[in-house]
Length: 249
View (cartoon, rainbow, N blue to C red):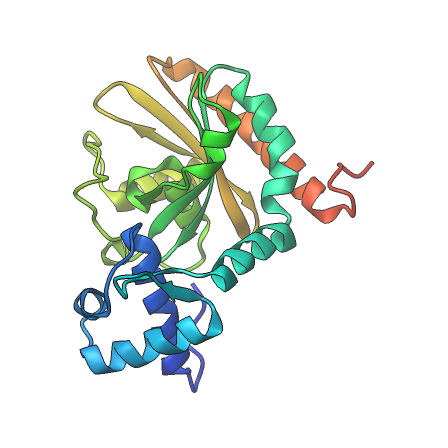
């Protein structure tokens, strides 16, 4: 995580938190609910939301509730193309998905993983891209791999809990899982439903996490899957650095 600058712009930071509150809701919400979620006064939040709506980042519906606006949609589309991550990764993800496992690509922010791609066996590519699920980092092998790749000491309190998204992990603490991932070069999570999930970081410093998960997967196959993921991660980086999205020779 980047250190706080000497003179941070608090209004900008609060504006971004307003945007996150709106997008987290996944439905139009009013300014009072946003203020409650953020722990701020309604007057202050109303001013921030009004400014974001003027910019087109948000828009109001007929009931004066806020939802993402056209400028935010455009920014999201432009950011995906500018980062080159998803366009470069798609050929690699499609190839991995043919192995019959769940395949995922995601990014880490403020202790949570946002899946840019999450395809289960039999699921369409469109559904895999459009779902954009968000999970606490400690419930995802991608999250563990990215936490392990961070240079800062791990603060378990920085990883938010989410009862709705919580899945039971047998035995190990978050700190133990992260340290294990650092030693192995990949993260491995074993859930109580017999699902095994393996994740690696893409890049150093990482730009994303890449993972494969499956039920009833023998432990002897995990190192092989990790090696496959490392090769796939290197190919994604190669594609991102090329001008046309194809690997460089």
